[in-house]
Image 1 (cartoon, rainbow, N blue to C red):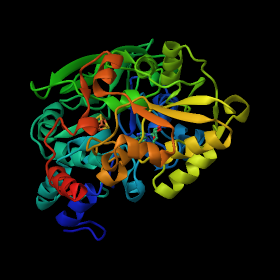
Image 2 (cartoon, rainbow, N blue to C red):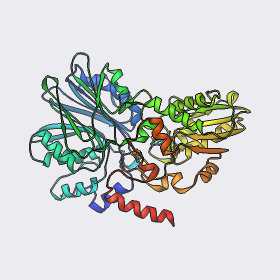
Image 3 (cartoon, helix red, strand yellow):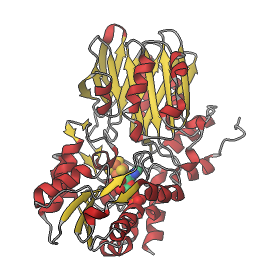
Length: 483
Ligand code: AMP
Ligand code: SF4
């Protein structure tokens, strides 16, 4: 039976392909810890930068799983009474970023599944590229979907597979293509899973009095007093069970490490370590690489708060030019990009940053930013700096130019959105009004991050997985784009 508000396959495929569903989120799990929900609230705070549209926590007392989720920031969704209504030693939390149309409560996570084999909750980060095909298959077999989140798909597929719970998870994972890191909680077990390319981060830590913590980023470990144990490996399913027994399974032998380069460049907090690499250090060295090949003269170096400050420090160290605070961020405005519509984003940039005239007036400024997506932020900042009296603004970007859409859960899913897909470097420079513009090369980026194990698809169009229906739309877009 088709639900009243559900879409048929063609509509759903178009919906997916339009990039309206994207999941760059944060997952946080606590296993066998007193007041797990309350502690997971603090852990999720450390992941709030990964998503501000919705938040949720599922908690289990060993018998019953209770869930609460809502739209908005954690502080808007939860209060003491709500946390108190989620008792137990097991908790699974999630913060979600979504594009405008997918910002419905049905898509908030964790997803609660009331299955005959036992209830469970699912939270995930990433994007399954064959989701439209898998959903169609499941709907044909009678599954009914409430929202469009990949978590629901994971839940349905697990239910349909045969075997023990972990066998079901393993069989379901073998059917997924794309980027996913997910955490599943039953009434007394927890599972942490990462896709075979390791595109999205997920790590595990131990707690001082026993128990475990699972998080999209290691920065959330400190806040709950957890000690890092390991990153979940690509293709690995880690099971945490009674008496703190940790067991790992591998759903495939065909794995590679292709961590999303944008995690290092933009998403992750500087105090997080991903696959053994500290994010602040990676950014700082990328700033050094930008300065190594500098051929323009300037007076001061400034970074765009917050994600570009590490790269600006590196640039200043290498160039010998003073690092200055030339831009001030209004702390009470959220991340500009993580606003569903372009209008909100533009307003966001205006409200978010101010140039410090006493610092930049009469100066030739090197302005370091982490990336250019649509060009809105750089254009506005160059304008702000010039209005504040900077004589020249040289923009240096701590990433290669974003020339291809991402289908792995990051919100850049069409060529039209990417200014560097449409314009060459000189045209982008003109558009943003800078006196000069340089990007990091892919090679410099790899050297700066000290690893080859990176996804670089959005910089070179070499995708690490098959793209299924997205491949078709990509070809069509490419053709339209070349005309
Ligand atoms: P734009 O104004 O569209 O060029 O956005 C560029 C800014 O958005 C960068 O300075 C980053 O701080 C941030 N950013 C870059 N990539 C992403 C992304 N995929 N999702 C969210 N924010 C991003
Ligand atoms: Fe990250 Fe780019 Fe790969 Fe997407 S395509 S996963 S944004 S590196």
